Amino acid sequence: MSLVARAMATAAALAAGVFIAAAGAWAAEPAVATAHDPHFKDKGLWPADVEKTAYSKEIWPKATLMVWARTDGARGPADVKAVANWLVDGKAATSLPNRDTDVYFPDGKYAVQGKGFRARHVTVGQGVQVAWSVDLQPVGNFWIKRGGSVASASIFKGDKNVFIRNDNLDFTKPESALANKILICRGKNSSAEIIGVVKAWDEFSILSGTLIVGPGAELVPGDRSVQNIYPDAKLILMSGSKFYKRANQPWDYDVIVAGELLAGTPERPLTEDCTIGLSWRRKGRGPGEKATAGRPNDYGLVVRPDGKMYVYSADPNKARLVITWNGLKSDSSGRAEDVAKIPPDELRACPRKVDMVFQGDVALSAVRFDCVLKGGIMMADPSLRAKWNVAVGDHNEAPPDGLFAALKGKVNPNLDVGYGYVEMNAIMQNKDPEP
Image 1 (spheres, rainbow, N blue to C red):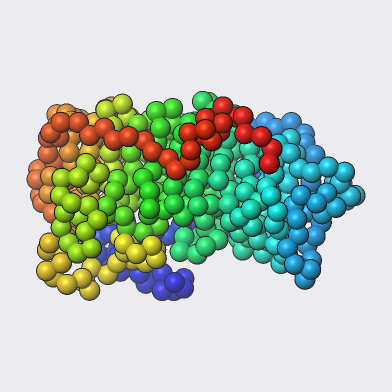
Image 2 (spheres, one colour):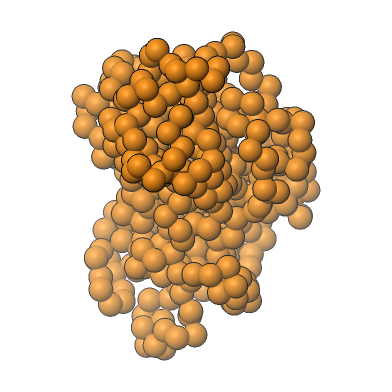
């Protein structure tokens, strides 16, 4: 979809009262700004509150910078495992990158391939293509410049505060994706903050530590999986950020919260709306049914009994967490669905509305619900509603009182991830060897 077409679709979706993804943008960065030398003082490159971020305050020891030498793409893709393809201080390298080195792929029209390596900070320049086989797994900052692409950056672990930045801001384009499956495995007191757009083709799970979707940024998991926030993990949405799948997924959970889901923090409260765009739910209705009525996974957002969900806002009447329909088609295209073109019988049988289950510790001090099914806000403790600051949109299936319902029983889904148990344990214990 062109930028013009996407802008038109966005305008139409907003007019219809639904959310449609549109990333924030920053100025084009100079080539000298990198993951290892980010230039945080250059305000044109970073969100306005950069000085409050954990990644900007992190202190890193000096490390060897390894620069890719084969920037002439005319000779075809080059092997990252060939020492001759690397430079250190402008001279031929004598070893390969490792977890204690920084890596810089300068701007240019070239591709790199070969079995992967580990590194600390990694920068992928404009026009650079990093093949799937390389499978970057940076333990430090990660920056993909606009026009660069990485087929697989699948695991982000480490004990420091880092940023994950992708300047390819159109989520419908392949360059916005970092991998098929992405795992966030940070240390207990460390975080990774998204800048720009981070998309997964399939699964995206937060196993441990904190993942922050920074101001104006977008987190876009695939539409073939459930997004799990594990008990030792936390997901935080900042002002203007968005969290939604790359297409509508009406046959399984969108998000399961067993850890914490926050909108804003006490130190960085919301100053404008942030958005969770859920898939509309079939509830056993409509064509192409993949889930039958009553299946336990026919919910959008589920906060498990052991989960937590809070909102921190500088002005609860102006800056809220918005929970609504993502506005997208159910065909993995990332295209907006034009409700006006849906046959009336189908739309009546299967309205494009969302639902959610709130259990555990939930305090929504500033929230707006839109495009919600009748009885679609199911609460283990309905009395909590009186303590929330609730606003509703104009596209719900029922008046405000009709949107809320007492939850019957518990909804406590398992947390699944597509990696094998042996590999998972190795990842969590930081025992995976250098490739």
